[in-house]
Amino acid sequence: MIQASKREVRKGVALTDPKAILLSISIVAAAIPNGIVNSSGIVIIREMSFSTTKINELEIVSDAVQIVTILVGGNVT
Image 1 (cartoon, one colour):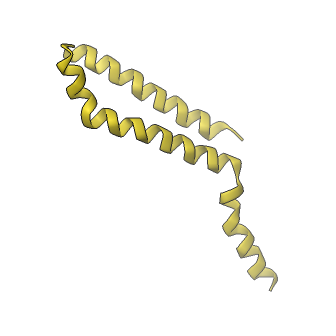
Image 2 (cartoon, one colour):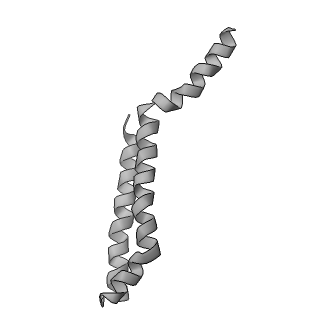
Image 3 (spheres, one colour):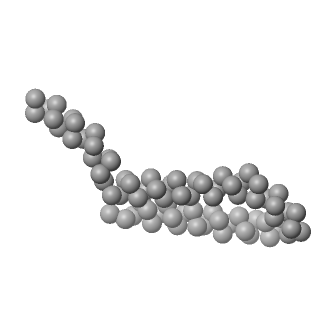
């Protein structure tokens, strides 16, 4: 009986762990704009008469924000 109760407790730990919750939220938050930018962002930016270099610079900013968000979410305890 004691081992069974320990297993039940372990299953619920991830749902109440603040670090796991914040990391999950940061990954989802980074994935939503990433999907939009990758699917239609390049076409929209190109239609606005931006050069390929400017398009790449705008993508770098988006990627940097995603990386920082994931790192901050992973380091919050």
